[in-house]
Image 1 (cartoon, helix red, strand yellow):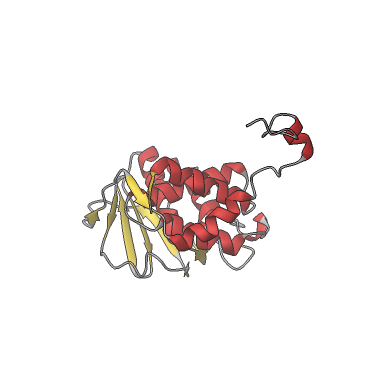
Image 2 (cartoon, rainbow, N blue to C red):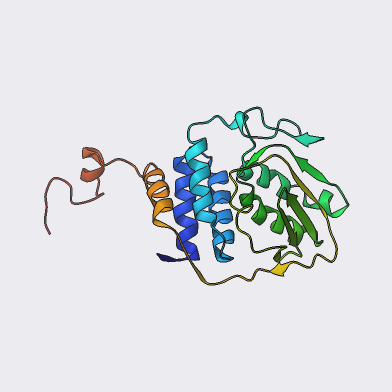
Length: 216
Protein backbone atom coordinates (compact mmCIF):
# COMPACT_ATOMS: atom_id res chain seq x y z
CA UNK A 1 0.00 0.00 0.00
CA UNK A 2 1.24 3.49 -0.89
CA UNK A 3 1.89 6.05 1.87
CA UNK A 4 3.07 9.62 1.99
CA UNK A 5 6.60 10.06 3.32
CA UNK A 6 5.24 11.82 6.40
CA UNK A 7 2.97 8.85 7.12
CA UNK A 8 5.93 6.48 6.85
CA UNK A 9 7.91 8.64 9.28
CA UNK A 10 5.06 8.66 11.80
CA UNK A 11 4.36 4.90 11.60
CA UNK A 12 8.03 4.00 12.01
CA UNK A 13 8.69 6.55 14.74
CA UNK A 14 5.81 5.21 16.85
CA UNK A 15 6.97 1.63 16.26
CA UNK A 16 10.48 2.53 17.38
CA UNK A 17 9.17 4.06 20.58
CA UNK A 18 6.91 1.08 21.15
CA UNK A 19 9.90 -1.25 20.82
CA UNK A 20 11.60 0.57 23.68
CA UNK A 21 13.74 3.17 21.92
CA UNK A 22 14.00 6.63 23.43
CA UNK A 23 11.96 9.27 21.63
CA UNK A 24 15.20 10.62 20.16
CA UNK A 25 16.18 7.26 18.69
CA UNK A 26 12.59 6.62 17.62
CA UNK A 27 12.80 9.83 15.58
CA UNK A 28 16.01 8.52 14.03
CA UNK A 29 14.19 5.29 13.17
CA UNK A 30 11.42 7.24 11.44
CA UNK A 31 13.99 9.34 9.56
CA UNK A 32 15.96 6.30 8.41
CA UNK A 33 12.92 4.34 7.23
CA UNK A 34 11.55 7.34 5.35
CA UNK A 35 14.90 8.17 3.69
CA UNK A 36 15.26 4.62 2.42
CA UNK A 37 11.66 4.25 1.29
CA UNK A 38 11.95 7.56 -0.54
CA UNK A 39 14.70 5.93 -2.62
CA UNK A 40 12.76 2.73 -3.36
CA UNK A 41 14.67 0.77 -0.72
CA UNK A 42 12.92 -1.40 1.90
CA UNK A 43 13.37 0.93 4.86
CA UNK A 44 10.14 0.14 6.76
CA UNK A 45 10.58 -3.57 6.09
CA UNK A 46 14.17 -3.69 7.36
CA UNK A 47 13.25 -1.50 10.33
CA UNK A 48 10.39 -3.84 11.22
CA UNK A 49 12.77 -6.81 11.35
CA UNK A 50 15.31 -4.87 13.41
CA UNK A 51 12.74 -3.61 15.93
CA UNK A 52 11.29 -7.09 16.39
CA UNK A 53 14.78 -8.37 17.22
CA UNK A 54 15.74 -5.60 19.67
CA UNK A 55 12.34 -5.30 21.37
CA UNK A 56 13.13 -5.34 25.08
CA UNK A 57 16.92 -5.56 24.62
CA UNK A 58 18.93 -3.21 26.84
CA UNK A 59 20.59 -0.22 25.18
CA UNK A 60 24.04 -1.16 26.48
CA UNK A 61 23.86 -4.43 24.53
CA UNK A 62 23.34 -2.60 21.23
CA UNK A 63 25.54 0.49 21.38
CA UNK A 64 29.26 0.71 20.51
CA UNK A 65 31.44 0.00 23.54
CA UNK A 66 34.36 1.99 22.15
CA UNK A 67 34.55 4.31 19.12
CA UNK A 68 38.33 4.75 19.06
CA UNK A 69 39.13 1.52 17.17
CA UNK A 70 36.76 -1.11 15.73
CA UNK A 71 33.26 -0.40 17.00
CA UNK A 72 31.82 -3.44 18.73
CA UNK A 73 28.65 -4.10 20.70
CA UNK A 74 28.61 -5.73 24.12
CA UNK A 75 25.81 -7.94 22.81
CA UNK A 76 25.55 -9.93 19.60
CA UNK A 77 25.60 -7.04 17.12
CA UNK A 78 25.50 -3.26 16.89
CA UNK A 79 22.19 -1.54 16.27
CA UNK A 80 22.39 0.48 13.03
CA UNK A 81 20.13 3.15 14.54
CA UNK A 82 22.31 3.79 17.59
CA UNK A 83 25.48 3.44 15.54
CA UNK A 84 24.22 5.64 12.72
CA UNK A 85 23.27 8.43 15.13
CA UNK A 86 26.78 8.27 16.62
CA UNK A 87 28.37 8.44 13.17
CA UNK A 88 26.30 11.51 12.28
CA UNK A 89 27.89 13.28 15.26
CA UNK A 90 31.33 12.59 13.76
CA UNK A 91 30.69 14.29 10.40
CA UNK A 92 33.46 16.85 10.97
CA UNK A 93 35.98 14.13 11.80
CA UNK A 94 35.01 12.14 8.70
CA UNK A 95 35.48 15.31 6.64
CA UNK A 96 39.02 15.56 8.02
CA UNK A 97 39.81 12.03 6.87
CA UNK A 98 38.85 9.82 9.80
CA UNK A 99 37.96 6.28 8.79
CA UNK A 100 35.45 4.28 10.82
CA UNK A 101 35.36 0.48 11.01
CA UNK A 102 32.35 -1.25 12.50
CA UNK A 103 32.28 -4.80 13.76
CA UNK A 104 29.25 -7.07 13.47
CA UNK A 105 26.13 -4.97 12.86
CA UNK A 106 22.48 -5.77 12.27
CA UNK A 107 20.65 -4.63 9.13
CA UNK A 108 23.39 -2.32 7.79
CA UNK A 109 20.99 -0.87 5.21
CA UNK A 110 19.70 1.36 8.01
CA UNK A 111 23.12 3.04 8.16
CA UNK A 112 22.77 4.63 4.71
CA UNK A 113 20.62 7.63 5.75
CA UNK A 114 23.07 8.54 8.51
CA UNK A 115 26.09 8.39 6.21
CA UNK A 116 24.25 10.59 3.71
CA UNK A 117 23.55 13.07 6.51
CA UNK A 118 27.20 13.03 7.58
CA UNK A 119 28.27 13.59 3.96
CA UNK A 120 25.96 16.57 3.63
CA UNK A 121 26.91 18.03 7.01
CA UNK A 122 30.63 17.65 6.41
CA UNK A 123 30.41 18.76 2.78
CA UNK A 124 32.48 15.79 1.56
CA UNK A 125 31.79 12.60 -0.43
CA UNK A 126 31.82 9.42 1.66
CA UNK A 127 31.96 5.74 0.79
CA UNK A 128 30.43 2.92 2.84
CA UNK A 129 31.27 -0.73 2.18
CA UNK A 130 30.32 -4.11 3.56
CA UNK A 131 30.81 -7.51 1.93
CA UNK A 132 28.98 -7.50 -1.40
CA UNK A 133 28.09 -3.80 -1.50
CA UNK A 134 29.61 -0.36 -1.95
CA UNK A 135 27.56 2.82 -1.57
CA UNK A 136 28.74 6.34 -2.33
CA UNK A 137 27.33 9.59 -0.93
CA UNK A 138 27.86 13.07 -2.33
CA UNK A 139 25.49 13.35 -0.36
CA UNK A 140 23.05 11.76 -2.84
CA UNK A 141 23.14 7.98 -2.79
CA UNK A 142 24.98 5.96 -5.43
CA UNK A 143 25.05 2.15 -5.51
CA UNK A 144 27.52 -0.02 -7.38
CA UNK A 145 25.02 -2.69 -8.42
CA UNK A 146 21.24 -3.27 -8.48
CA UNK A 147 21.47 -6.60 -6.61
CA UNK A 148 19.27 -6.26 -3.51
CA UNK A 149 20.60 -9.32 -1.67
CA UNK A 150 23.47 -7.55 0.16
CA UNK A 151 21.21 -4.55 0.78
CA UNK A 152 18.70 -6.65 2.67
CA UNK A 153 21.15 -8.74 4.71
CA UNK A 154 20.30 -9.19 8.38
CA UNK A 155 23.89 -8.80 9.56
CA UNK A 156 27.23 -7.68 8.19
CA UNK A 157 30.48 -8.89 9.76
CA UNK A 158 32.11 -5.50 9.19
CA UNK A 159 31.45 -2.09 7.65
CA UNK A 160 33.91 0.62 6.62
CA UNK A 161 33.13 4.34 6.20
CA UNK A 162 35.68 6.75 4.73
CA UNK A 163 36.21 9.67 2.38
CA UNK A 164 35.84 8.75 -1.28
CA UNK A 165 36.12 10.69 -4.52
CA UNK A 166 34.75 9.84 -7.95
CA UNK A 167 32.48 6.94 -7.04
CA UNK A 168 30.66 6.00 -10.26
CA UNK A 169 27.73 3.91 -9.04
CA UNK A 170 24.16 4.45 -10.19
CA UNK A 171 22.52 7.49 -8.62
CA UNK A 172 19.37 6.63 -6.65
CA UNK A 173 16.86 9.46 -6.92
CA UNK A 174 14.10 10.19 -4.38
CA UNK A 175 10.35 10.02 -5.01
CA UNK A 176 7.26 11.46 -3.34
CA UNK A 177 5.48 8.35 -2.03
CA UNK A 178 6.48 4.82 -1.06
CA UNK A 179 5.03 1.47 -0.12
CA UNK A 180 5.05 -0.46 3.14
CA UNK A 181 4.56 -4.19 2.76
CA UNK A 182 1.69 -5.87 4.64
CA UNK A 183 4.24 -8.06 6.42
CA UNK A 184 6.08 -4.99 7.75
CA UNK A 185 2.84 -3.36 8.88
CA UNK A 186 1.94 -6.49 10.86
CA UNK A 187 5.06 -5.82 12.93
CA UNK A 188 5.12 -2.01 12.98
CA UNK A 189 1.46 -1.35 13.79
CA UNK A 190 1.26 -3.37 17.06
CA UNK A 191 4.54 -1.82 18.23
CA UNK A 192 3.14 1.63 17.52
CA UNK A 193 -0.06 0.86 19.43
CA UNK A 194 2.00 0.45 22.59
CA UNK A 195 2.55 4.22 22.60
CA UNK A 196 -1.15 4.97 22.94
CA UNK A 197 -2.48 5.64 26.43
CA UNK A 198 -5.00 2.98 27.52
CA UNK A 199 -8.62 4.05 27.77
CA UNK A 200 -9.68 4.53 31.42
CA UNK A 201 -12.76 5.75 33.25
CA UNK A 202 -10.85 8.88 34.25
CA UNK A 203 -9.80 9.69 30.68
CA UNK A 204 -13.36 9.24 29.41
CA UNK A 205 -14.79 11.52 32.10
CA UNK A 206 -12.14 14.17 31.38
CA UNK A 207 -13.21 14.41 27.78
CA UNK A 208 -11.23 11.75 25.93
CA UNK A 209 -14.25 10.26 24.17
CA UNK A 210 -17.94 10.36 25.02
CA UNK A 211 -17.47 9.52 28.71
CA UNK A 212 -20.25 7.66 30.49
CA UNK A 213 -22.96 9.45 28.50
CA UNK A 214 -23.23 8.87 24.77
CA UNK A 215 -24.72 12.02 23.28
CA UNK A 216 -24.05 11.15 19.62
